[in-house]
Image 1 (cartoon, one colour):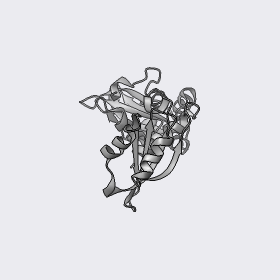
Image 2: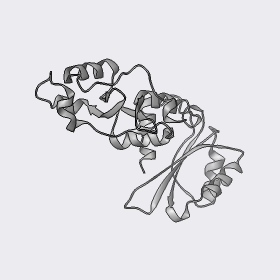
Image 3: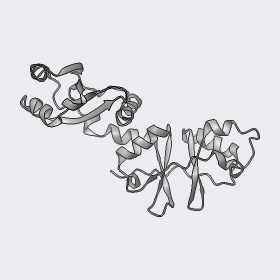
Image 4: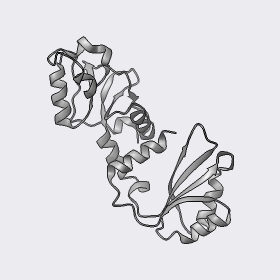
Length: 220
């Protein structure tokens, strides 16, 4: 799924002539902490609630504070995973989408991303979760997959997390079976270190927690 397919239509961009008071009111109405500032279809940047609250005169036009505009954006052809990475890196609640000529097309909200991710099989399908700790040089997804599939189970999705100061990684695996006892035994026989497993459905997991975890997985 590409960025242009994720655009929401209900949140208009601010104009540079709009005041900080208008911006704060819109943020409250649309339940976001950021809004895009656009002059016709020229994207100027995003502005945050915290920056607006730092403006002394509440009724001043936003253009007088263009130094507060953050130029971050995604292109219409970028994949949802890349969009999530940008949102996470910049702590945004909204991200503008530009076309190939860097003209403003619309924006994506964190709520929209959560809804899309929640509908992905890796998030909403029942199954077990296994977390392995590996040395980076020992990581072979093909071998791990073969061990799991020997137990008549399929992998729905995987996430890799790592730390710059460590040679180890954590591999989180979602499988399509709730009964993962035989998988755990097989992985242990192959001397994989299991740091966490969950054999129950994750359908009750809070959506925000699910999204935060997903963004953290991508923020390697």
